[in-house]
Length: 284
Image (tube, rainbow, N blue to C red; front, top):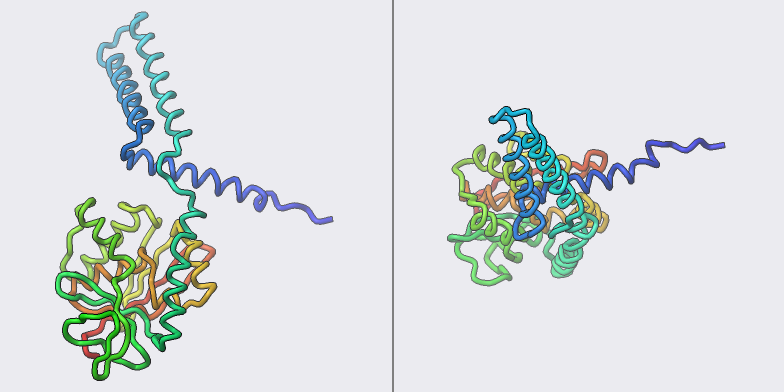
């Protein structure tokens, strides 16, 4: 008789409460226009004010006891509002399935057109573009006026990087500025992924020869990566998602150089994404 594994049975429950706690923290840090979140903050402030008044007056009378009870009541009410408030949060399993179809479709169309090169993110004037080469084509030189590139020695397609809307939003709403150099860029990327957007738990970087290796651990939308790579790992390197693509966008803007996605490897056990990028000069 097979004995059931209690850890395996409890795993869905633990995962559920983990997601709920993460949503709660997200609501606390980013209340937005939520009336429930704002009301809970007001209750927390009222509770803190009640406890502070009791502490500083140091009176052992009925008034102090009433203030303590009111403080606890406000605190519990605030926790209650936050716990049952769903706000604008999106279930991770739903969010993970919003974009893989678009990326898989782009990869299929490009392959049918003979374009099989990995994504190269490069600066173009004041903006950033993505180039995918056909065969052994070089990175194009000069201004690119059309999506289809037909230059001598350079054939492929150009599109706006999928991370471009996220990059623009972070600059306008979160004050993201363009750092100078690779090290400062990596620090900014780490801040965005682990703090501002809270998409990942940690991010580590290393340099291996000409390659820049970035390891993103505890990625919360890891299911999106699994769905995309189930079609083909090439889908990720040809059309990196907004999170992975943001790395190339920030590096290209900071260094004014082209960056190519050589490899993207997944580790499902730790929900880790290992991204390998290589820096290129245009015309190479």
